[in-house]
Image (tube, rainbow, N blue to C red; front, side, top):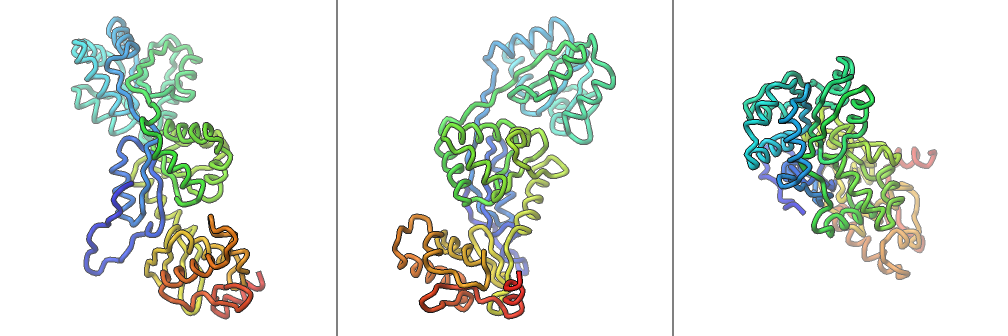
Length: 389
């Protein structure tokens, strides 16, 4: 888990960011620190559990064979899909003593780059790309190739770490000879414990969003849930309570195949992904006028008139139960059922309620109704509104 200490607050700056009170799960293996820092700067608590690890194939026979194949017979087109993969390919070729020969062949080919980071890696190798899509989408690369015509053309494709869904198949269906270049592979993490913890937190709704920056990461989490017999529960959580935020449409494919509607930014970057969460999560927060205050219920905290009030998990369970029927009396027995692991002791409700009131800093927000239970002290106008609902 990341250190949740925030940056020093500047004079006049708000005390919390748009993601304050929310917990976001990060499944990335690469650039996880960067994504975590972006989320934390906006106030989120971050739970990191890499869903996979990257295994370079510098010693792998497949990559060596593909490299020799391209040196022996120059392709018409080379599609570079990731910066780390392209750099790894050149470095591996150098290690085999084939670097200069490979670069010579790549200069003879039409070199297509999926996005600006890949362009940077290509140019760092002393090469120049022929074209790169503004959308950074492989779908646009595929459209361009098919429009030009691929029948009889030899096309080398640097893979993502797994087969690209539909990309290679479409080229082959169009008559192309495709040379896959497997630069690295995604593998399960060596230590599966953090991923299991993230999975449990998701099922318990202790995280408000899960971020995915690669399709293999999404597939790995789904596979782990299936192995544990928890796939239906995970799909339910991602479909209703936990926001599945994907960096782009390719990343979203494993989730969408399972019927999960995902959220993606218009630009496939970490910054826009974080900004999407800054809009989506606060929009889902429950906001109520209570006892002359404005209360906004977030993931693990409550904003009371704009002040962030961290709330213990048991207290948050009670508050959510009260907020489901704002202004109505909720019996102690119902609140007891909302407390995880409380058993049958209604004294647990009283203890958790006392701690909740202390955390909120405004005891009058929640009223005790003698011998009946508790209720949120909705303002009169709001009380009438919810009574009519």
